[in-house]
Length: 397
Image (cartoon, rainbow, N blue to C red; front, side, top):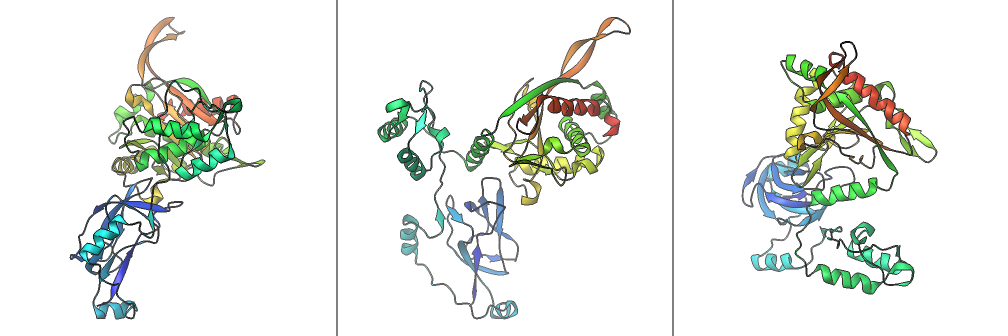
């Protein structure tokens, strides 16, 4: 009977591979079209690979914990002659069956389209002074090993002028093997790569204490309650909708303004951070965003965000106050210019000149991290003050 291949799909922009994490429907089982057959993990999320047709899974060539390139054949579905004729694939030849012992041998041998991880994190000794120069030969060796300069920044160079030699590198790698190591997850590697690319820019941060009493009172009066981070997201969206220049990207000698105000927000997931995105956040009222925001938080924590719900945002909001932190300097994503952070609220004394007394108020430190090539301190300060004004008029959100 005709057989249709199960192909590793393109799971998102710039994603070239994915790792099989679970077989949902085993060999020999019947399957409906569009049902999840396999679960795969990319550097962004866990997603499903669906059956292209209705039939019976006659063979699964993919193995759990193995990475496959986009376009790889992961298995085959046997379909009826009638279904094949309806789909116009009646002449497709069936693959040759794989014997059990041959399958075991194939598992040990390198596979076509199977992908080996190209980035591996290395712990760096704290006492090392750091390399000041990497020779072309050293760079070639690092490329061969799939290492970045930041992975090896702690190697003290023994060559002239602090140059790191091949012997220094091999000795360092040999020492590392004596330590206890654990594999870095794909999520951790993705976060590391994003932060590495972000840090190539001159980044700065401005800080402003913002009173939260009006925000908290407004939230208490609402039937459907938005979290403080969503208030901050909405305020930032309005501010950027009024003036998108602060969220522009410097490309050559031009500031490229965003086409829409799509704001991301950081959600802690297993061994990393997911950033779901609310599209056109400046065009929806706060009350209309609560359900969408809560749904995206749940999906992000499960690492099941659809491709359209992540990426492409112009700014991010992060609430590090949930960890009890009062101040932090988070780093914007590589494609973003600004990131708004909010710390934990606390009750502090505030001078009221009208009665000449100190009164207790709830206040939190807000930070705005930004690409200093695009913004200066004044522009960043004005943006943060506009966010403060909006948060102190929560009915306008």
